Image (cartoon, rainbow, N blue to C red; front, side, top):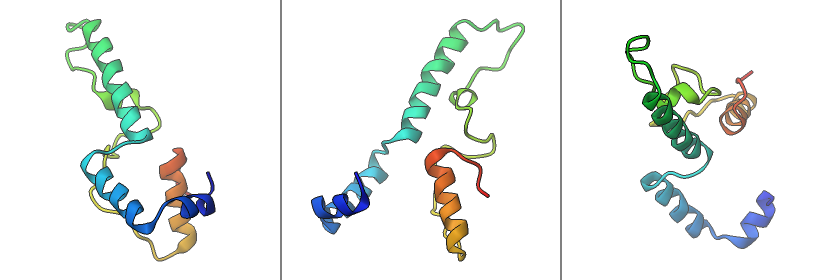
Length: 100
């Protein structure tokens, strides 16, 4: 769906309500990746040899497109002065590409 189509079908009030709901109950690809990473970590830990690998697997170990130092959920939005840099950052967040 394009942005124009979405604007025709949803009001600003409803969009704001969805944003508030997302703050309470996150959804989308990042949460899905975390959910699948958790399942993969569970399976890996069930089959892990604790003598050869004493540390447990974590969900983040199976989310390969995320950097190790990147938190699953960032607390505050990142707002940049340069619109091109902001677009690159959004593109990286949405599509998992490294910012330019």
